[in-house]
Image (cartoon, rainbow, N blue to C red; front, side, top):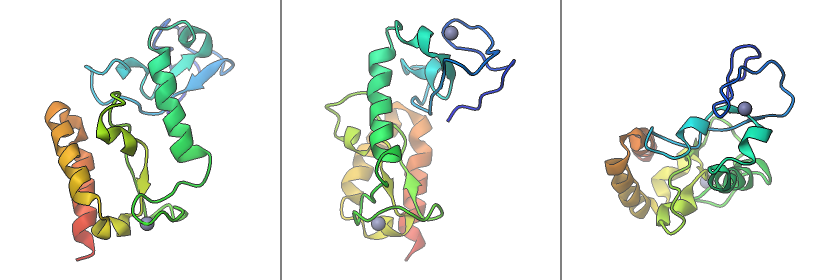
Length: 156
Ligand SMILES: [Zn+2]
Ligand SMILES: [Zn+2]
C-alpha cells in the first residue's frame, strides 16, 4: 500500500499536499510502467473526491475489486494446492498482470502461491509462457519471472 505522509504526500490528481487523512484513499501498486493508464495512481494516496469523477476510476475499481477478492476478504488460497496461505514466509504474491480481461493472464492477477509449491504446480509451464510474453511488452515484470524461476528451482 502507498506510504502516506501528512504534509508531504500529494494527491496525484489535484496535486495538493495532504494535510489530513480524511477522505484519502491509499492505493496498492496497480501499474508497472509509465505507459500504463493507472501509472499515476499506483501506490498513491488520492482524495476519494478527486477519484470519483476521474476517467480512470472504472478501470481502477476493477483492479481494486480483484485485489480485495484475492488478498483481503477470505484467506488467500494457493494457486497450486488450493490450501490457505497462512505462513507469511512461504508465498509469492503475483502483482496485477494485465488490464485486458480477455488476456488469460488476467486470472492470475493478485493471486498467491506457496513458494514451496511452485516446484510442483501443474500450470507452471503454461503460466510462465504467458508471463514471458508479457515481459516482452513490459520489462518491469521481469522480477516475477525471476522470482518464480527461483522458487521452481529451490526445491530440487
Ligand atoms: Zn485530490
Ligand atoms: Zn500450496
